[in-house]
Image (cartoon, rainbow, N blue to C red; front, side):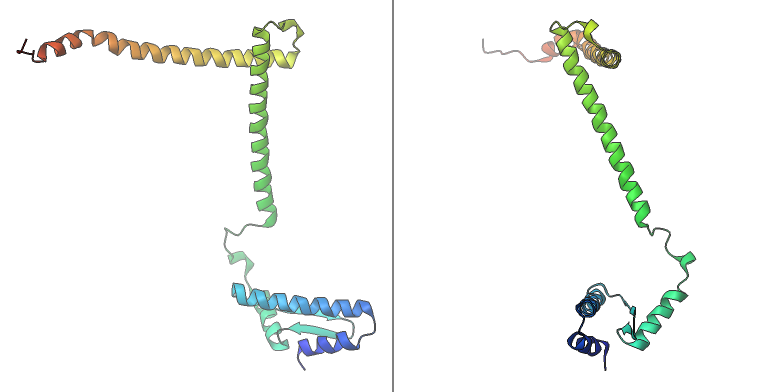
Length: 181
């Protein structure tokens, strides 16, 4: 008698609801293992110890063979790229912490820009606390460097134009004049 037939007999003949639920769940587990075997091309084996009878799936000999294969596997030769669940979660946690840090920094910058605009509109800097003042100093330093960079860019663009003033006249001389006038 196969494990499935044994389970069906146990679910029909058992008087206790708990025992019936157990055997229904075991039958469902075996169906899922069969799906896993078919869909993923793996060889699962199930060993369940129950009072009175042990259940082995798919058959006793196949389950023992798969269990022996599992025990004989050399874990020290497994792929170094294998990632444990903990390692994966730790990476995700660090990535989320970094995202949060970046968002907090962007939020702080926007808050300081709003505060800067309020100060320009007439709010007294004496009303600001120490954190806000430090943020304003950083914002002003950032704005100053941006202005200096832009000033430098404009100066670099301005220099070639001044040097090309003479070239414009030379180009005009090389253009043939209209003789039809």
